[in-house]
Image (cartoon, rainbow over all chains, first blue to last red; front, top):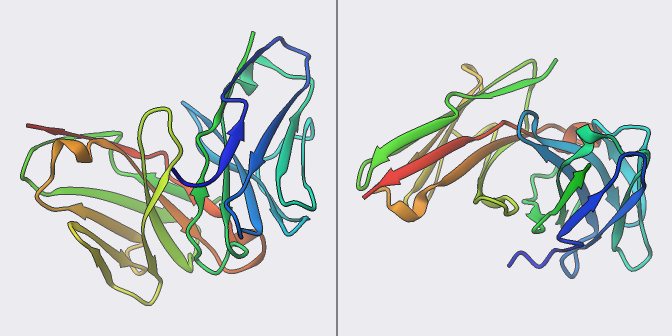
Length: 115
Length: 114
């Protein structure tokens, strides 16, 4: 158990809908990262927050947004969903910002299926 | 653009042998390289980190090498066991800012047969 929790575990929805994925980092970790993993693309970095502020963006679509709250939990919002958004979404956390070599602790993931 | 390649999608070996996985990268100057293990349906788990000025790192049966000239890392599991069967991901970390985030390879699925 990494100490990172994600809810829900599974999510099935229809095209055009909006969903929210939730992540609670390990106690004491200030950085939260979101990743998307699909069979053909592998694990892709989406966005990072550090202590409530956005620090870096990766391959995140404009239809997706995220935020980190004062209690450090984070939410990833996916809107106008398309079939291609079906994937595993992972949250990870680390003590410090990326770039200092800290290991990242990954949550169990949310499996999103868009029908 | 930055590219990371793990040499094979799958590797099958016999129990007790040494598994060697390769990670090559192009158009990137990483500060660190990390290796993760991922079991089906689960999140990746950190295994080892090696810095650009380190040639080799060991942890129990695991050994990682990092050659910045060849732009390659090798990941070895000695005396492999069926429990080592999993997908292994290499990830690069650049210097600060947005380059400080992990860029992952697609992974190599290792199967260790008894």
